[in-house]
Amino acid sequence: MVGILLMTHAPLGEAFITAVSHVFRGPVDHFEAIDVQPDQDLGEVNRLARDAIQRVDDGDGVLVITDIKGGTPSNCCDALTSPGHVEVIAGISLPMLLRAITYRRDTLDVVVEMALAGAQNGAVRVDNRIRVGSV
Image (cartoon, rainbow, N blue to C red; front, side):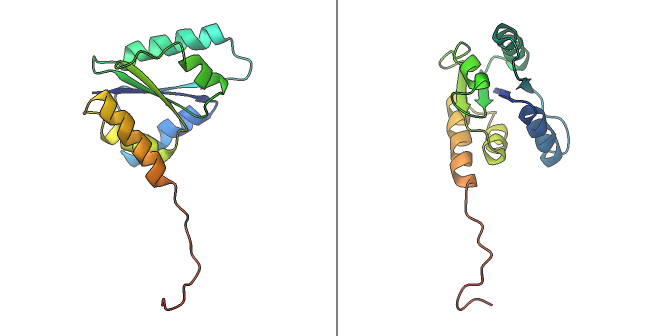
């Protein structure tokens, strides 16, 4: 099973864990978050991330999801990437995360692609205006 680590600006990671626990009606295995605090030491963040990757990895690899490319959490991920073993994607959304969790028994490459598809398909305009001809 592919492990999942969230690297986000505080308090997003824990909020996503809470949301996922709500949707799946309980905690999800091999799934953690690191909420990076303002002015937190980057060496400490990297150490925490490496330790978390070891905890969530059962041998099938780890997907690290960060909130925004170029932010501190994302920049810390650069040193963690190991193609085929630790992959990083940015732009977390709940549809992305739910899709990644749903497909995580597949290969890491498939989980990455499914997560990205979840993000793209999950961003839609919700239009409540009455259309001509609709009741």
